[in-house]
Each structure stands twice: as structure tokens, then as C-alpha cells.
Length: 156
Length: 147
Image: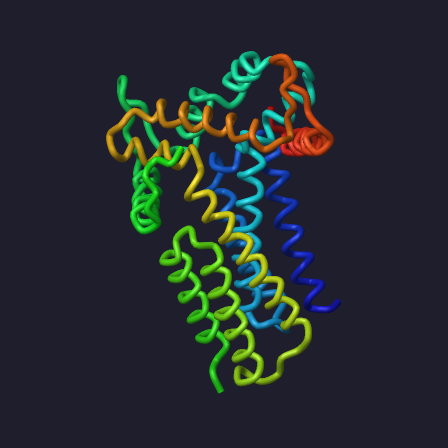
């Protein structure tokens, strides 16, 4: 078998396996990041060991690029507000704006988004306030550096 | 002869630096990315380890292309993700709920302005492009088992 084909087969298998895991667990990407990342690393090591004809640098580059692109597309589909409301209007043509916002809040509103962050282990509720976990603090530090450099101050 | 590993590690470090420093200036980032990735690929193949084949060239091309798409998406996420902004607000000891609520309201307004939706007497309908996207979103939600 051609080495290129072998690399692409292992990569497709990794992608399929991760999608099956997420499907079976019925969870969103950010909730299962640790498992997904571990799976990607293991499949990368496997590919480097099995396909000796291709220099590992190219395999690492392909895996890194694929992971980043797949993560971006997948998380966008999961949380895009535009896609969600287009889907809701498609299912229910003639809905009023007020009903749309009310229905949206039930599916992907503030409480649901906070619950997802909690399930993902980014923070713990602390009475009426919130406390970041070590994972949450790590993400916040990276974000702070980017937001400071890119001049983003709550552009919501 | 320059070892592949050092050449591509250098390119990855440069790309990471450019991504961080170029901020939201997409054109600057894209241009520098093409120069760095193209340069690394050229140096790797003309002056790198001997014994390359066409399959490695194809993999390198696919890898750099996916990396570019991934970084553009990551940049958009860092700038616009409501969830990430909520984490930032918790880090500042603020209540994340208003940030999320403001974000949702702003995005819904933005979605109306994108012309996929017609508002007729306070009732919302999709135009043709909106319908296509609505159907595609429905398929994706079923495939990914999202409620």
C-alpha cells in the first residue's frame, strides 16, 4: 500500500473513531477535550511508527493541521448561533422573533452554556459566584495574552 | 543540508509567533503564512534531507493548508466565542451571565442582518440560501447528536 494512502487511512480512522466516541457519549467537544486530545496523540504515534516511509515531521504537521481545522469546524457547528436560529426557523416557519429568542434560550441559552462549561471542568459554582478550575485558569491566561495583544475587550 | 525537523520546527515557531503578533489583521497573517510555509517547504525539499518523494510533497501541502484553515478558525474563536469570553469574565471575578446574554443578543441581531431571514409582519421566514443552511444545520445536528 502506498504510504500516503496509509497515512490518510489512519487519519480518517482517527477522525471516525473520535466522532463515534462523541456520538456514543452524546457530548460536546469541549466536554471531552482530554479524551480527544489523548486519542489524537496516540494515533499520531501509531502513524509515525507504522508508516516509516514518510518522515515523521510531515505526519506531525498533517495531524496538527487536521486537529486544529477539525476542532474549529466542529465547535463552530456546535455553538453557532446563526446556524441554530436558521435551523429553528426552518423547522418552524413564521415564528415570531420573541418566540425564537425564547426557544433559543431553552436550547443554547445562558444556563445551558454555563452548564456545558461546568461539565467541561472549566469552573465550579461557589455559592452565588464562580471559581475557575486549574484548567479554566490555564485557558483564561492564554486568552488574556491574546486579548491583550489583539486589543479585544468584551466585543460581544 | 538542513535537517527537516529543524526546518519545520522553525517554521512552526515562526507561524505561531506571527499568529500571536498579527492579531486580527487577516491579510498580514495570510501573507506571512504563505511566505513562511512556502519558504519552509521549498528549503525542506531543495536543501533538506535527501530522498523525498511526491507523497511527502502532497502531505506537506495538505498539512500546511489544514494548519492555515485551523489557525484562521482558532483566531475567529478567540475573538468571538461567547463561551471563551465567559471564562475571561470569571477570571476577572465578574458574573459571566450578562456577558453570555449580551453575546447571544448581539449575535441574533447580527444573524437578522445577514439577509438569510425575511421578517414579514413580525413573522420570520427563510430565503433560499437560509433554507439551504437550515437544512445543512439540521443534518449536522442529527449526525453529531446535538439537541
